[in-house]
Image (cartoon, rainbow, N blue to C red; front, side):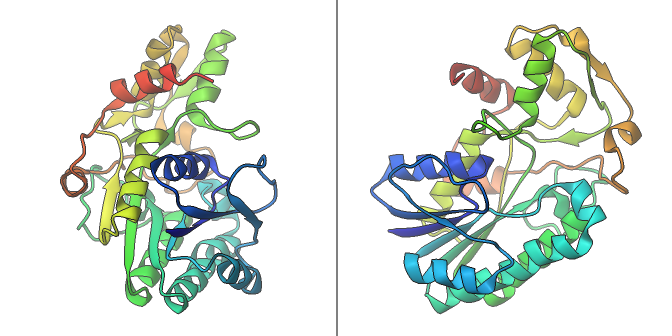
Amino acid sequence: MRILVIGASGFIGRHLVRRLNAASAHDITATYRSRPPAPDDNAWRQVELTNPAGLEHVFQQARPELVIHLAALADVATAEREPERAAAVNVAATSEIVRLAHLFGAQLLFVSTEYVFDGRRGLYNEDEPPHPVTQYGRTKWQAEQQVAKLATNWSILRTSIVYGWPEPGQRNYAPMLIESLRQGQPRPASPDVYRTPVYVEYLADAIAKIAVRNLTGVFHVAGADWVSMYDFARSIARAFDLDERLVIPTDSEASRASVAESPDRLGLHCEATMRRLESPHPGLQEGLAAMRAAYP
């Protein structure tokens, strides 16, 4: 199958491309924005999401049967400070990708976020109506609507906080926390902010299954455990034999930094998705054990 992975050089994208390559002999075209990855068997193409001509050129080169769209302006604080940029990257570019996928007759899988919900109670189901309260969440919800309205063969996959080992030069919460604790540095974490953390390899596997099986609709892929960021951080410390006393509880206002209305209680229910995938639903303990076993 000819697959175009947009945003393949990111944290999730690199794991996904490896998973797709391991699963079958796909013809993969993978995009990056600024920093070219190390050479491998994939066709890497540089593209700026806000450049429609550049996107169309990549589609013409790849002639995809399947498009997986991962790229986004995903930093919540940046989206609040730069709403026009967030809209251009997350909404306008997605609309162009939808148009091109339709033009080439390609299936489209769009990766979205738990931030499409308001975070008042947490553990949202696949069929619940979104109600975003951040600029990032609003742009992703607008993009979801474009996908569902205009694409002919589509799926939307929402996820929660993702952890695992990143590529060199990338940043990720869990490895950063591990490094700080190894150096004896205290790290704050909020007992009031709840998520359903998912190990990146589990997420990549689910994306690949949904895409390759041509499953359609809305999917939730996150961890089985709904935990506070404080408990998440302490679980990471225990999994890597580090001093969990260095994880200092802080209030949600402090953890938000400058982000207005950042939702406290997000997290996703995934049971319907797991039934469709006929897959187990690993929790935090299993994910952290797998992460430790994969230490680079």
